[in-house]
Figure 1 (cartoon, rainbow, N blue to C red):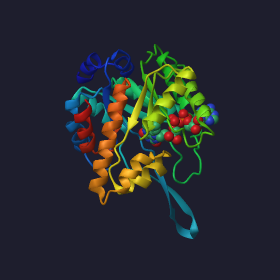
Figure 2 (cartoon, helix red, strand yellow):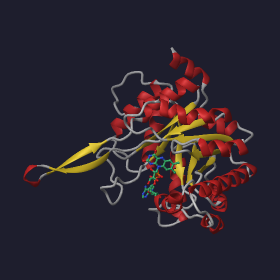
Figure 3 (cartoon, helix red, strand yellow):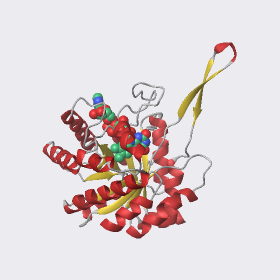
Figure 4 (cartoon, rainbow, N blue to C red):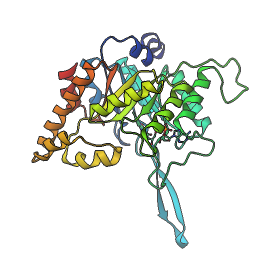
Length: 327
Ligand SMILES: Cc1cc2nc3c(=O)[nH]c(=O)nc-3n(C[C@H](O)[C@H](O)[C@H](O)COP(=O)(O)OP(=O)(O)OC[C@H]3O[C@@H](n4cnc5c(N)ncnc54)[C@H](O)[C@@H]3O)c2cc1C
């Protein structure tokens, strides 16, 4: 009953992006650690509702493996899943807030059949937006290894979703298979993906995802708007004509200063680090980081970006401060 109501209210993200006259507000949350309740998700979303988010993304985290020593020196591979899945969380968010929830789907760890089953579940629940990603290599692997029978690159996942949108299911015996209607986002990298030999090669790979049927791009976080503007220009020159949404994350602690560049393969501009170096503690870093994100956001809005997408990592206090200044 409620699901039916959701279906009638919600708008596919691509329609929102195409029809908006001002920059929209959106954010990304992490599924909570295992053992926590859905309330921890609501606590992260509640403070941001007043800014009328267009959608909220929910990340997906792969299983991790550990090796335990057994008798006679054998090693047993044990899978640990730290966070619950995104499908249920997205359904709960849409149900509670009547807000578009976008699950992240990744190639890693899934066969195509498992991916199709996940898409069927999402479609059944009235969730028809997805962000299609490859996923990172897991800690025990030096490079990304696709699941046997799974998708190797995000472009392959996009193709699979498009096939379902055309009513082509893997199981050819399904009778009267209804086409799905997923709006598909993909990732882009203003400072290039770490595995890519150069920016142009990476943008050509991005173009392949769009040509395969992706509808819009959400970028990796960045702190230098000039790099984002150059990226958008290069994408347009390559023929990528879909909306490109900048991803922003406020820098909030001393640890972030080295962690964020290392983890996300990005640079912090020297004007920014000059200011950060003057900071004596985390509070001071947070104040500088918040102000930087506000200025970045204002400049991006002035440039007419379709939406600003904030990585909250489950903590909404700083993003709330930024949104209050920008939206
Ligand atoms: C907005 C955003 C959200 C994210 N959310 C998540 C998440 O929820 N969970 C998660 O695990 N990770 C997430 N990530 C991280 C992402 O999974 C990694 O950055 C991953 O390493 C690449 O994913 P992709 O979809 O960009 O891959 P792809 O587009 O497949 O690209 C991966 C690399 O392969 C290259 N490439 C692409 N196609 C080919 C080809 N045919 N032949 C050779 N090379 C090729 C590309 O240039 C690039 O270097 C997110 C990233 C972003 C930007």
